[in-house]
Figure 1 (cartoon, rainbow over the protein chains, first blue to last red):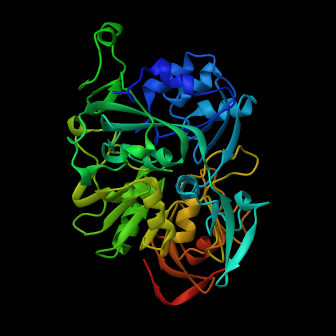
Figure 2: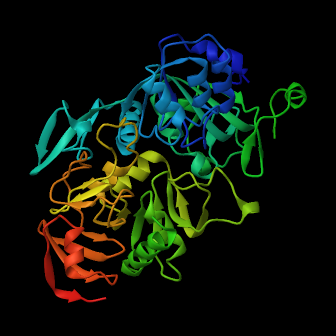
Figure 3: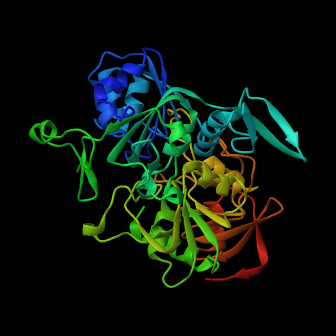
Length: 242
Length: 216
């Protein structure tokens, strides 16, 4: 199956200075395996577009510690101290975007739309220096679409073509990011044959997906746990894991 | 601020919820509301993609891929649906949410609020606050009357950064319920044994006593 690749191969599609769109809300729906691979690489000056930066030592939090990131674009960086500290120490630039504006900017980026006008943030610091327009008597602010060099997303299941389904609220930003990345790499818990997912259950059709990586984490007690090395070594090829 | 006071505010707001409404709950005191609703049939929308969010599940049923906007585990009520972030904020900005219950750092006497940033501190989190402020049909602010340091939160003019031009509809604190009508603030109800004079002292915003005022 040509789309299935190893994590080490996946990160070869990312270059220094790239913008990466990273799915997830908190750490739910985050491609942890691919991010671990980036954290152990020499990649640098990356701009991460993501709602938040994972947790300390988990997901994008690892990239922050490893020094892969130059900038973060997202809506909420105050859940943990890790992003705030990096910003205070000058290790990280932050561009704050309202959460709905982030989602819509990505949707536009993936849909061939240059930008959009929204009432969100009008009259606030976040709308300063942005173009305003009065439509039907109400003031709107212009927001440019967001696209990424590489989208790194997480789904629960993929078929061999790259059709995706998601697990509950782990869906969050993953689908829109799949539409807005030039190269799209999905991390999945399970890979099945094409035809095994009911067509109406597919959330992200395969044309958006370039590569598939298997998740090395195992879901246990409602959380993704990093498996021991031995478990990882015994893992192989296409099939169900975890 | 004691948990009992926070719970008192959450309970009062719960009484105001209208059966059948779609309600989005913000961070802070609003997160206590799901446990105060009882049998009232409201549909809770969560910005990360749920309509029909239910109560906190038992430990063994906890799934960290079924979480609220606070990133806490939740359950799904009968008839619940899950959707992506773009859809969720189409609901929020598009006016499909009947009511948002939000916390606030400050509210001014016209009903404009500040709920995302503190002057002089790093401004690094906004989440869905501004989208909700602009898009929800109705907004109730659920907040303690004073800050932790005893400073008024209901003020003449905001000194904290605004969350948007849109005015809120109501404020519920442990002491009082205020309503905004055409950017004017009215005292509707006193919820503690505080006197009018004492209330005035801790509420710098100008307000009038409503003609339909209810004493505690």
